[in-house]
Image (tube, rainbow, N blue to C red; front, top):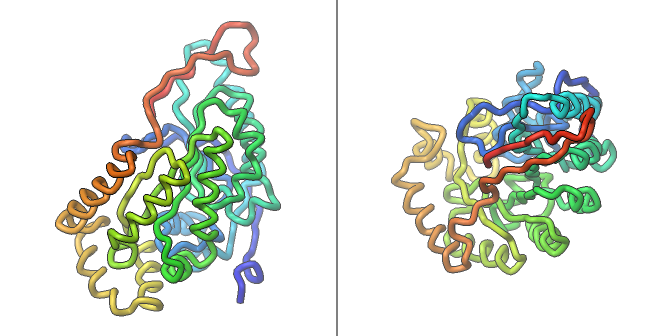
Length: 316
């Protein structure tokens, strides 16, 4: 049975659309997630456990019961308008869309909540980053081009079609994602690749990683950021191991040992792998090139009662 035949949509109202991010490790200060749950159904999705906050299971319910924050654009307008009217030199850090669930999952094609949020953001001088696995983002090129400080991160972790389909059952083709990176950059939108998550024993073959990075380079990717699978909660870990048992039962013991005492694999595994990948990136002149950098902007925000500028300073 196809996901589109079984998915359930539920409209909810959010108290805020723009949510502060306090973790010092995150390169952004605010996040926007117009949806809860994600139809892509990636086995490794770290946001799966958030479904439990709404009293739902973190199993395949995560991709079959999608919550639509129908008032997210309205709340975003309210929040940004209030911020812009401050006379205290308010600092607004960078905003990230798609930190939990994909803002361009199939539900977006009809509901257009992400697009409605972008229609508001183009009127405010705030830096923006979007993370997605979907070519649907190309629909909104007209809006993306109006945002002066924007970066798009396209997530791709393998070109192996068997692994892709087993571990990301409903996500768009990796080839289509590479084409999306190429098109975005051709249109003047800074775009690169999150090579993530690298799955031990499945997508960590250096020859295959080199091929993916080479393809990314030919697509004019501005950066390639690799990171290894993390199993952040028990809910995420449980679903991932169920998927592993279904498709790669011979690997369950190896994964269990590798993640026996931590969210991340032991450094004995990860350090040499990341060093090797850095070497591949260097050969393609992509080493050390990250999606975000330190910048500061001072502009007049919409909604101000006079001509005084509202400073929006931020560090990515």
